[in-house]
Image 1: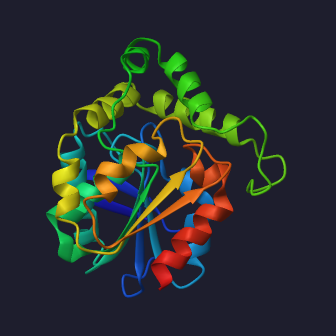
Image 2 (image 1 turned 180 degrees about the vertical axis):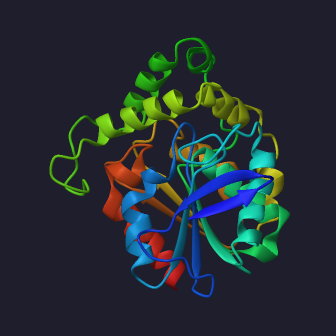
Length: 268
């Protein structure tokens, strides 16, 4: 599905079903140097089980035209424009990593638009190490390699791996390389800088009133479980679920567990 925002084309994967704004609608927001495809299993299942789905490509990522947006606050306003243009009054919003900060900020800006909020692999502050930030600007492949290693709990594929022959780590690496190839404007450095400079997390969390799910991974080295405490402590109406044997790339490393948690949260 294509939308137009400020004369720029926006791509959203609808999970193989025609988008219907009259159904309960789930918006899925990816993290740094990713695109909609990280939600492949979750988006398709939800779209075939009673929900309309928009798995978005942020500007400058995947099939959405650039440039990439430079701050979490601007990305959150863009997300609210997507909800407005799609004809949806209220949406379930799930965001992963950088996407979780975007979803959180959007929920604080327009609480009437967000019915439920799911924050996956989240942290605040979401600090990026100096070494990784430098690599993302000057040696992008090194940054891709580091993030790929840090984002998985092991090299071994889990039983929940989406399909025979599917390489979780290699597909993650190739996606990041593709994002670099189609956008020469250093998206990785842009995204990491946006995470690094976002200061409004706790203030935004205090304004969230909708039911909120914190979905975290026990072996997450990028956003450790304890790093989400400042946000979860600020939100009263919350659930916290921790997935075992899982790193930061949770939607692919433990695809079934993530899907089960999201489906259960959104349907009740």
